[in-house]
Length: 537
Image 1 (cartoon, one colour):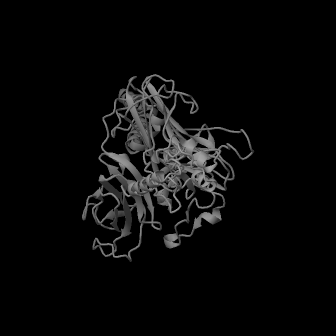
Image 2 (cartoon, rainbow, N blue to C red; image 1 turned 30 degrees about the horizontal axis):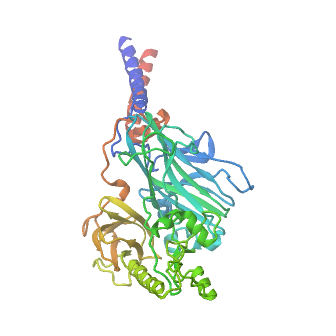
Image 3 (cartoon, one colour; image 1 turned 180 degrees about the vertical axis):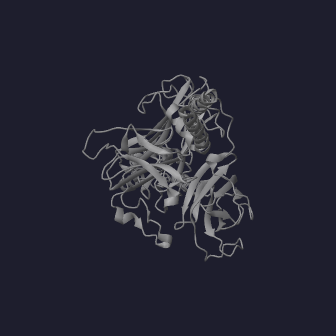
């Protein structure tokens, strides 16, 4: 009898030990192994309904936020949250691993995102938050559909049919608040990130023992398909720090991690026209052309808001002698002495006077402007399937989609691009002369056959093109070094953290140790069963 009681006590103790271990690991987490202070920044962790709402499937560690109402009946609708998976054929919607966070709404717009609060932060610590974001916006799905018959994969879809003017950004509340509209939030730059992942970055200085990071996406106009994707979110110690306007600390350190905006030379008629690319904003374009503000671009193009779209042509200035004011002066014969210097016109150029000296100066400055346009260079990149493993692109190999390309200068990632297999080579243009590094991450199930890291020296006015080979069934590193994406660069050591939720820690712990836990519990149950049998005798 005494032995039976001992066995019973041992079995109960084993069960209690397992339960205590799970709760302890959840309540007192260890320091992040990769320097990332976020729970499940990779978006790979289990997805479950938030607050019991089946349409809001959130990855562990994250909570959804959204606004509803205000204006038209299609505006600010609650989206649905789920995951996008590379293993299901949507590799272009994933940066690394198999999953990315996705939220979407049809025939409407949303202002929504996700947030996570991180504790255990020492006030005054500088923190840098980064995340990769991508959007898809299409007025009519059929017009954006590109059939993809090979291997039975789902069709690719692109934002080619009147996208709904998407705005994506990330932010940090250094006080730990959970209101995305709080004036305390420090925001990154804004981009539409249509069809290709762009990396957003922002830095802030912690003002409390916890901070909150936000993911944000919205649209201005409704469309049949409105999707936002986020992946590889990282919060690390470091960065320039800062606070929102009016907050304590220095000026906010906000950035848009891939803003490389090229400038265009003057056209024959003297106008300087900029063609908008994905991710560009009026403010960024104004800075690129030396204008005082985004308002100068609005004035030149009779715009009343900040909405621009890919492929749109914007007037950003004139070469001297080509402005409308100059043409008006010529027609009226206004060559009054004393006005030869001309009047300033939007775009930073000056309208000419009527003297021959002013005309000569205008011609000289026009030539200088054209010369200035040749002071930058570009790097063009393509990824091909190296089926014969000869490490040479022969012009007939198939272009490959789903490869990640990162352009770096030193340790700073300037731009990121995910290949689609159709529109390559992709060019990073408007680059100032100097040394750069191109890093390529092969698609899933592929390895590099050529070097995946290439050092490139950009020369003024030069365009250089490089093709990287990948193939199935080739050991990684056999023909060249395979490097991780920019989000996986060696991190800064992280402090010990108090994670935002015991429940989420329990789920993460169970997902990693479920096998051991099942074995221990099974053994404990066997001991209890045997003890119960002995007690019945």
